[in-house]
Length: 458
Image 1 (spheres, rainbow, N blue to C red):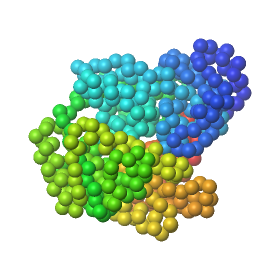
Image 2 (cartoon, one colour):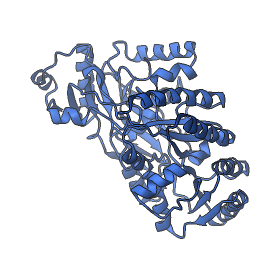
Image 3 (cartoon, one colour):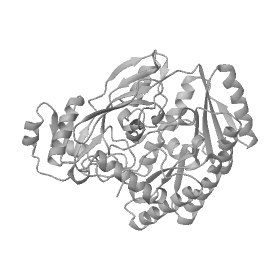
Image 4 (cartoon, rainbow, N blue to C red):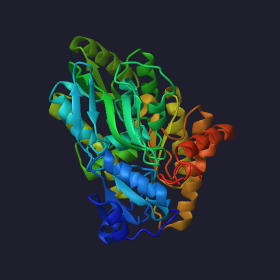
C-alpha cells in the first residue's frame, strides 16, 4: 500500500455511511482465502451499491491506498489476499438478483450473489446458468467473473466468459464504465468485457453483471464408470469425445481421491479401483439414451464397470461426493499444493502416467481429479508444510509438472487463475512481449497500481 496513514476515524469521516471495520477479528477473517496464504488488511469495507464503491475508490486513488476486491474468498491462488496492508473491499452485501429477462434469456445480478443461489432461483423457473464451479454453494458470481471460472459443465457449455454480456465496473480512479451489450451479439470497439473477465480484480471493481442463461434441458442421465487402470480411464475420455458425443460433464477421480472422499463422506464408491469417471448427458430423452448406450460400450471395452444413477436423488448423491473432494483433501492435508493444469484430451493418459511417475520418484503422494472432459486435471501434491525439506521438493515438482504440461500443448491454469501462487511461473507460458502488453494494459487502467497489487505479475 502506498499510504498507510488512514486511521479508522479519518476513513469513517470521509466515507460516512459505509460500513468499515478495523477490529482485529474482522481483519483476521479477511486475511486469507482457500490458498492458505495469510496477510492481514488494514481495514475492511462493505459497500452496498455502486455509488459506495465509487466513493471508496476515489478516496483510495486520491490517497494512494491499495484496495483488494473480495467475493467469498474461495479462490485457490491468493487472488483476494490483501498484500502490504491493503483495504479489503468486500462485495458480499451487493448480492441481489436485480433483473430476470426470460424473453432475451439473461439476468442482471450484483457481484456478491452466490453462484448456487442463482442456480436454484433460475431452476425453479425452468432456466439455468451453466458455469458451476465445485465451490458453487459458497463462491460469488463476481469472483467467478474475476477468475473466468469453469466447472464440470464447461465441457459442453463453456466457461464464465461465454455467459458475460455486460459489466458495470468502477475503475481505480472512481470512474464507472459499462462494457458489452444487452443484445445477443455486438462488435463495436474492443471487447472490454472479455478483458475484464479473468482479470482477477486488478483492472476494475465489478459492481453489476448481465449474464446469459439457458432453458433447462429436458432430461439428464448420470453414469458412474470405475476402472482398474488409470490409463484406461484416460483413454475412455478421449474415446468418448472422439465418438462425437459431448457429455455435459465428464469428471475424473483417481484412487487417492476416491479414498479421501470415502473416508470423509462415504457414499459407497468401490475402493479397490484405480479411477472413476462421473459422466452426465443432457438433452432429449431418446437422444441421450442412445448416447449413454455408446458411452457404456466404450467404457466396458476398457474393462470398466458402469452403473447408471436410478433417479435424481442418486445423481445428487454422486455430485455431493464430487463437490466434497476439495474439503476431503484439505481434511487429509491442510497444506497440500493444489494446481489446475490443462492438456489436450488425447494427452490425458500421458499426463496421468507422468504424474504417477513423479509421485513414485519423489516419494510424495500426488492425488488427481478434475474435469477430464476438457483436459483440466486438478493436481494435488499431498505434502505437509511443516516438513520443510519435503515441501521444497514438492515445490520443485510444480515446475516439472508445468514443464510437462506445456510440452504436451497445455496450460498451467484452467480456471483457478494466477493470483500469487502461480505468478512466479507466468513467464513459462507467456512470452516477454505478451507480458509487456499485459503490464501496459494494467498501467492504463491503474496508473497508481492501487487495485489488487502483487497479483498476476511479480
